[in-house]
Structures are given as C-alpha cells and as structure tokens.
Length: 179
Ligand SMILES: [Zn+2]
Image (tube, rainbow, N blue to C red; front, side):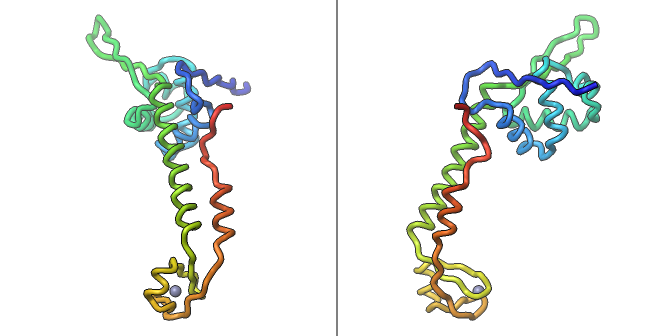
C-alpha cells in the first residue's frame, strides 16, 4: 500500500509556515530527518499520545519521546493533559504548535540573513591578504604583521574577494517564505 501523503495544515497564519520549513526545523532540532518527519506526519494527522505515535510509525517509544521533547523544548509542539477518570492517570496528547513554530522560523530566518549581511559587510569593507597556505587576514592585521604570515612565515599577498562576495550574495536561507 502506498503511503498516504499527509497534508500540512496550519491553524496560524504566517508566511514562514510551510511543509518544507517545518520539516527542516524539525531536522535542525532533532538531527534525525527520517524519524522527525514521521512524527510530524502524525502530529499533522491528529492529536496523539507518544504511544500512539510509536505504534503508528514503528519508531521506538523512547526515540518518539526524545524527539517530541526536543520539539516541545523549542516550542514547536505542545500537549494537553487529560485525566482518566478511572485510573486517575494523565494522558498527554501531542500537537503541533503553529504559532510558536512560526516565531521560531522567523527567528531562524532573520538570524541567517543577518549572518550573511554581516559577512557581506565585512568582505565589502575590507581588503584581504593571503599566504600560500591559505591563511587570510584583513589589511590592518596583515600590515601589523608586516605582510608576513605569523603562522607560516610566508609572504602575504593581496587577494581579490569578488568571488566570495558574489557567493555570499547567492546564499539564501534554507527556509523559504510563502508567496
Ligand atoms: Zn599562513
């Protein structure tokens, strides 16, 4: 039987919420793409307990719990507690938290863009000097070393960084924004 495609529907409106971003975020949190995706599929199907998720996915219960708590810790998932009137035991029903996930994604996205922008500023506002072994220094530092690499004792030469700047300009966030 072919695996049914789960539809990722969000109960919160954000340009950062889409299946790609959510799966990517789940991977960043768990470092386990395969299992985190299966667990996400469950969360997007119905509220479920960790045991139900383990049963539905075939993933070991301790692994399901570990990943759910990583999601919970970051805010991407939360749970509701329900008390069994007979046993008085609590059961935890897990669900995806769209609003928190959107905030997390926005933060990650902005952070990444800021890092690129900072690197670009640095590259665009400096001249760089390299030694034959690839050590690299901005002008001020190279001048301080009198254009001799302090690590290799080799001559430092000016190196154009247009390629680096162009590569940085092409770098985009691995998260996408909905049109
Ligand atoms: Zn060197």
